Image (cartoon, rainbow, N blue to C red; front, side):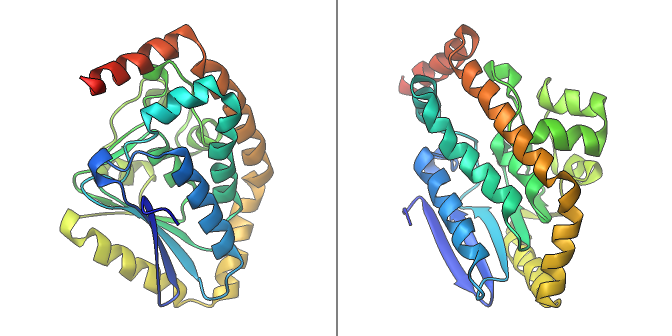
Length: 251
């Protein structure tokens, strides 16, 4: 496991920790591959009863690393690494929790739609600025959010890229609970402990029943979104925005 993605396993809970705080835990392709491998391994590990996703530092994740974004534009086949992670989220059979603080940008928000229990800190700044980057929604969000919120609210969040505070995340059903930043980790562990105290196979079977109606459709939508996302990455609109960000960051 890369030092940028760490694992901690204790009392049946596997923590997957994004450990790139100096870059606000921006996700590289290697981190995506590590997350996919960890989820697939945890699915078959009887010692793991739940997985908790979290980030070190003051942010959950600022989304995709911009340098990797440009690489995806130059090598569209690298997009499959990200899609593999999204499919692993859909297929993960055990309880999946997230503890989210600070920035949760792009996939940092859409991946929460696949979690079973989400805690957010008071300082949450979630956003899905896909269109602002010249891109399109990803992660199955074009299916999940309209179903959760209706088309108009989904348009506001996915197309207009509206900011989502902790309070609003709970109101919209994206998060279960809002807590103080200093209590986020302990509260997330407590939530995980409460879930794994339940009869394990009944939990797994119940999650499967809840997810079954959308599972096949989600896999299809994730692939369709991925194809359009890859096409948009090579568009003049997206390349102009991404290169602009890279030029700013190199100054």
